[in-house]
Amino acid sequence: MEEKKPYLTVTFIQLIYAGMFLLSKAAFNGGMNNFVFVFYRQAAATLFLLPIAIVFERKRAPPLSFKLFCKIFMLSLSGVTLSLNINCVALIYTSATLAAATTNTLPVITFFLAVLLRVETVNLRTLSGNVKLIGVTLCMVGAVTLAFYKGPHLKLLIHNGFSKPHVQEDLLLSSTNKSWIKGVFLMLTSNILWGLWLVFQGRILISYPSKLLFTTLTCLLSTLQSFVIAIAIERNLSQWKLQWDMGLLAVVYCGVVVTGVTFYLQAWCIEKKGPVFLAMSTPLSLMITVFFSAVFLGDLISLGSILGGILLIGGLYFVLWGKNKEITTEENEKDCLEEKEMA
Image: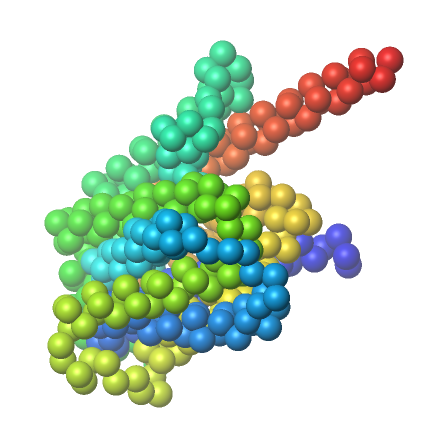
C-alpha cells in the first residue's frame, strides 16, 4: 500500500485541478464576474494560508528586504494576478476542456523560457537534446491545432444543477472561430506568465527560502492586486455579492483546496518521486475534464481539441523523457567520477 500512495496522490491532485476547471467554468456560466472571482479566490487562499504561516514560520521567518519585497510584488502581479485573470477571461471564450489541454503546455513553456533565460541548456548533439526539441515542436503544433482546427463536435449534454438556461449561448460563443482563437491565445499567454513565475521564483527562493511564507505573501499581494483590477472593471456592487451558489463553491474550492491542499500534496510527491513523476501525471486532468465537462457542463468537445490535446501530451512526454534522460546521464557520470577518485 505504501508504494501505491504516490500514484493515488497524483491522481487525486489531477482530480482537484480538473475540479478547478469545471467549477470555474460553471461559476462563469452562472453569471459570476471573472475578475471578482479571482479576487475572492485569492482572498480565500490568503485567509487559509496566513494562520498556518504564522503558526509554523513566525519564529524562523527569513529577513525580507525592500528590494526583495518589490521582486515578489512584481512576480505576484505577473505570474499570479495577471495570469489568473487572463486565464479566467480565456475560460469564458473557450471551455474547461481546452483549459485542461493547454495546461499540458506549461512544463514545455517553462522549459523553453528556462532555455531562453539560460537556466536550462539543450545539447542538440545528444539524443536527449533532440528529443526535447521534438517535444517543444509537438507542443507548438498542438497549440496551433487547438486554435485553428475544430472539426466535428461530440456533444453530450445532461441538464442538471451545473447547467444554466443560457449555457447554449455560451457554447455558441465558444464555438465561433474568432472567439475560440482569442481564447487559445489568452490561455497560452496565461501559461507563459505562469511559466515565468515558475522560473523566477526559483531565484527568489534562494534569497527567501521559506516556501510557505513566500506562497502566503504571494497570495496576499495577489489579493490586493486582484481587488484593484476587479474594482476598476466591475463597479456593479451586485456582482460582488456572494450567495450560496456555484460561485461561492468555486471560490472556496479554488482558494482553499487548489491553493492550500495541492501545495502540500505536490511538495510531498516531489519529495517521494521527484518533479518528473508529478509532471507526467498532468494529462490525467485533461482526460477527467473532457468527460465531466461534456456530461455536466454540456461543453462541445471538438475533434480539434482531442487531436491538439494528444499532440500536447505527446510533446510533454518527449520533453520530460529528454530531461529525465539528461538527469540519469549526469548522475551516472558523477558516479563514475566518484568511483575513479575512490580507486
